[in-house]
Length: 267
Image (cartoon, rainbow, N blue to C red; front, side, top):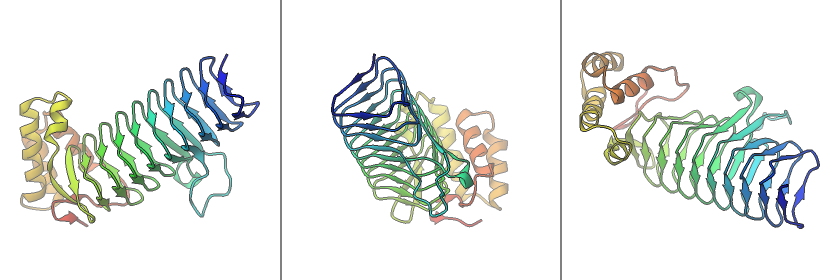
C-alpha cells in the first residue's frame, strides 16, 4: 500500500502504485497516476492528466501538470507524461499540452531537472536530458536525447535542439541547434561541436572528426544550405553522427531557422 503522509491530500480517484511514497503537504489531483517507486519528498503539487514514470523523485515545491500558460487554453483535458527515473528538483514546473499543439507534453526517461526549471506546454523532451537551474523551455520546444542546457538558458517557442547538443549558460535560443553542437550567447550562435559529450557517449574518434568536418562544411561551405547538406551526406553519409546531423538539418522541424556560428540564419 502506498505510503501517504497524513498531511498530504490525495484525490480518491488518483492512481498510486503500492510502493509510492507521498511526503508531507503534497497535493495529488484526481486524474494523476504515480507509478512504481515514485517518491514525492514534500510540498509537491501534481494536477491535470499527469503520469509520472517509475522511480522518479520529485522535490519540494515542484508543480507538475498545471494548466498550460497559453491564452488559447480553455480547460481541455490535455496531458503531461514524465518518464522513468527522473530527478525533479525544487520549484520545477511542467505544464500539460494544448489542443492546438497536439495536447501532450512529454518528458523522457532519466532526466535531471535542476531547481526552478520550466517545461512549457507541448514540449517534447528526450531521454537523459539535463536542465540546469532556471532553464526555461517555451511552448512546443523539442529537445533531443542527451542534451545539456546550462543555467538560465532559454528557448523561443517551437525551437528544436538536436541530440547531444550543449547550450551554454545565459543563452537565448531563437533558432534550431543541430545535433552535437554547442550554442552560446544571449542571441545564440554556434561555437563548435560538443566533443566532451560525444566522448562520454562512446562515439569513436572517427565519428567526432566527422562531426567536426560536417559542422565546418555545413556552415562554411559553398552554395545554398541545401547544397551543403547534400555534400555532407555525400561525403560522410555512413557515419552515425553525420547521419543525425543531415537528418536534423533536412527535417521539417517547424518555424525556426537553423542556428549558425553567426547566429540564426533565415536561409
